[in-house]
Length: 178
Image 1 (cartoon, rainbow, N blue to C red):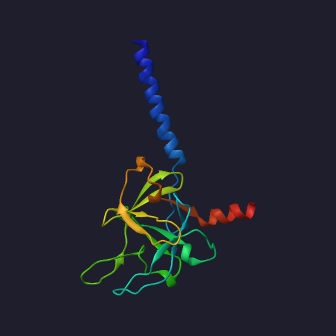
Image 2 (cartoon, rainbow, N blue to C red):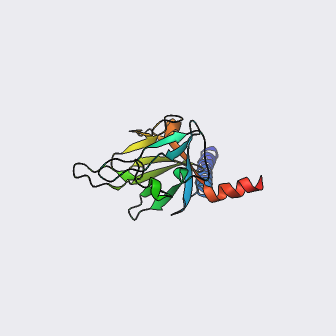
Image 3 (cartoon, rainbow, N blue to C red):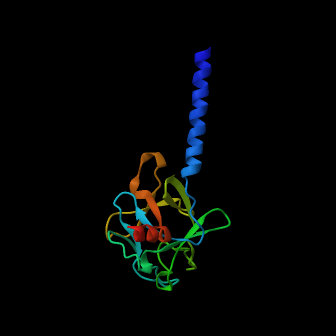
């Protein structure tokens, strides 16, 4: 009996340790903060190529191996919505209407803000799931346009669907220290 009670106690202790570890190490994204988004698989960065026009086309978003930290094309603002979802916006009017920030709403051509569900993976890593289509943002390598694919389980380690949210301000402080 003592052995069974001890095993039960160790299981509970292990579960509590996991919960505490997850709470301590989970980093919440800050509302209206600017981030650079890096793909976990190939270490490329999300980059808005150009601006589009409402009811005409949306600007393209690609992955780039190189990061220009001074370019607004790489900066994505995290905006929390009242329903618990998020919107990702750019830091510049030059890139506002693109395939990541705007949602297609055919047939009437009303473009709406795209809504996403973020699933925490670990550290600053998240999976970005389109709220309406239920597909996940996937990187396809340097210079390739982003794509939306069926979401894989977080446990399957589908790294091309994982995105590291790099805080621009903290990154600058780190770079200045080195």
